[in-house]
Image 1: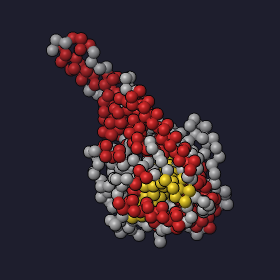
Image 2: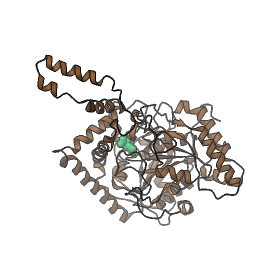
Image 3: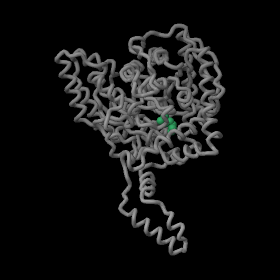
Image 4: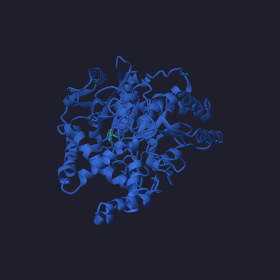
Length: 516
Ligand code: GLN
């Protein structure tokens, strides 16, 4: 087994004992990236020099007997949506292709404080809008298990990086499933914490009431380690929850006694791939064999989740993305012909005898906004802005946005009721395994429906985790989702660990061509 195949919790021990240095580990990750990322495309940018410098400094401080942070010397990959004052932060958009944040997001600051080694920035759907990482303005990411397929999205780069063992840990964000879905499709662990558990300060906003940062890892213990390092109250995010972060890594191996698991019959209806259904059902049998009691619970409004999400998320996006106007941030379209265009347009109206229209042509400022947004955003981002602007506009607000908010409240109420009866809810992450690249790019509705099982947790603000629970005959990973009550990340992690300890799905890894 090579160094890069080992989980972070083990690497920590080897680093602490002096059996391994962070420079060796970081170099091993960088070598693997050089050897294989060309065929995966997980990273947008790798900063090897900076990573090795950080690694060297950790090794030196360790040798000097200094007290180090919990991720000391461990390489972490970061989704290109979290501001880092030392890195360009693009959100995989032309709009921010050159954007250098003036400050660190709280998550990046905490990774630095934890003495992690920041390897590079991972690919994503533009502004995190999508479920396949194909909406990146720069490159698609391929699934390490089958490079003709997507890794899922929007955090597909982070998920693929961990699945391909380019980094033992990675950070992603989940607005409607963007951590859990790619984790499921790439055969790794991914967790969306409770809304407010991890600070959103310095996270480039997509849908502020839904966005949440969380960990990717190959084991539940590693996910606990990374979550513990980045979670916690932050006065700079007004939605951050002011509660201490439990020591997840200390309790992870304590099984949940008398575990009551809920299953939702509709999650197993038509549309669920039979292989996924079988794998999830056998996972439930594993829980039963571990002493869990399984009972049906109802989430009657879950079926409206996707519809409500695709009103609320675009509405918030249309407002959040208004700031990209060519003035405040990043890209501005070339304006060199703006005055000439304006004069020509005016002249055309005058020649047609329409002097009033000639006086009303768009000003150079409006032209600048329009051409910047036209060239800076990709098609899916534009679609979301239009959907959101429509849902929020006078006359439609009550029918769409307000109605969606009411549905959201009912979805949360369903979960509150369900969690009076059970400790966790178990089910699939997605209806099928990883789909082909290009398969759904022309069918946005089909792509939206992929989020069927994941969006409800975001709408309700509850934590949820995805972990590997099987493989299809064609060799594609299958994910299991556990959802828990607000702030019960500890319960989720321990519940997930129980399954992991009883099975070996988490040990499976893709064989990259020629990997060593
Ligand atoms: N696939 C969903 C969307 O496109 C979720 C994205 C996310 O969680 N960032 O909005």
